[in-house]
Length: 78
Image 1: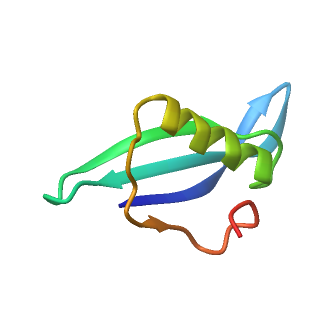
Image 2: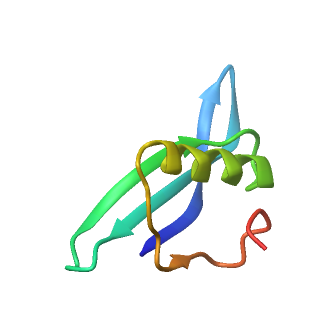
């Protein structure tokens, strides 16, 4: 099972802006939890391109089988 969502954080990069960080947390069938990754998004939103990049990287790193993906109506994941 993988839980995915984005958190918005104020970041100072010359000026203060709000930036989205995509977060994925996995839970194994034995109940062990692990942070799969945290990715800095582009801009302040949760776009399709950001989530495509996150899921592609998870697959390339060996994510072979996800039984359940949990999200809260993300626009990038219809």
